[in-house]
Length: 455
Image 1 (cartoon, rainbow, N blue to C red):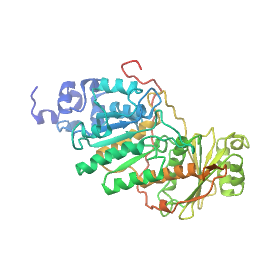
Image 2 (image 1 turned 180 degrees about the vertical axis):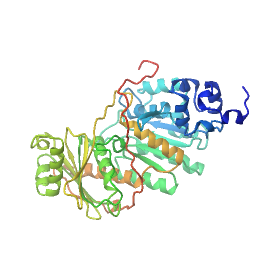
Image 3 (image 1 turned 60 degrees about the vertical axis):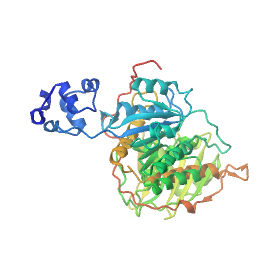
Image 4 (image 1 turned 30 degrees about the horizontal axis):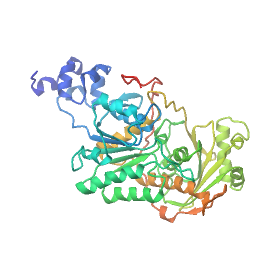
């Protein structure tokens, strides 16, 4: 079919055939077009009016996905990368992917049967090393972005409870290619940068040295909120808590990242972390009683959820992560069930604490779950080449969790009342200018994921 550009430019969208649209918009397959509801919807998903179909869109960023393990159905690799392949749910509707996954590396490949099946079904090559995946088997960088998902697999846990996942090990192979190629591209690193502060700081510093956008962290700060509000920039926030699951290092990181996503918006901006301390067991409540601000905020959460008196104190494995900031702001993360991930903050001039909850997470067996909003912001960074939020936040969240795990150990000995660790090296400061980033609109359907093959 040969068509002069102007013959279609001014025709209504609903007068175009599927074949005409595919010719003008090659990033969609015929199957994808047939799956969309209405040609006007196609125009909207392209960000185009019906009168502008003639212009071809820019090439999608080509992404290398480097993972530790890709299994079914709980691995983060499956949750995140399937969204980059097939699209994700954002602002109440399915959004086609705006990136193209062109290469895959899987560290624990023999155990990752699902990853192998998906790569085969999508005709995406699996490379033997992370370096080969980002060079596409060549000698220089050959992709426009890198996604690292090293959250699952059979890896050891050290005495302090830190899961020794190969995030840094994969990341440093990517950095090596950047340095050899004398150019770099945006990098996403799922959850915390590393269990080790030294590794995490090196990872952050390399992003600044080589001038590439870096993001990552928890998916929870961008999930649906109740109420669906964001703290204003320069909110006069004095004290804060987050209550949620802190059963292990990974669960704690979700809570800490929720905390950091909110306290970074306080008056004057982020000033860095002065100290971190962890307390386990009954002494958790001794500390809370000696810090009335924490008790008040915890009680406000209990009342908000209409829980019985002493609900949180009934926890059989209580613990608290205590954070002091350089500007005098105080915060704590308490273990607690029945409230999802809930933030409570004392804001100057307000009588009652401000409470924001993140609830109703449907994963991991649903087609759509908390990771939908995260792939949206991954995609935004790959397209815009700008960090969706300050990477310093990711580094601070990583550091708080790392030193929380260190706090209860000294000279090979464990103490339930951890030592207070001074952290002058976490003195990075910045002012957040981002807008709200959490999901809004209709929630996605809670249906099984359709893959086209048995898993």
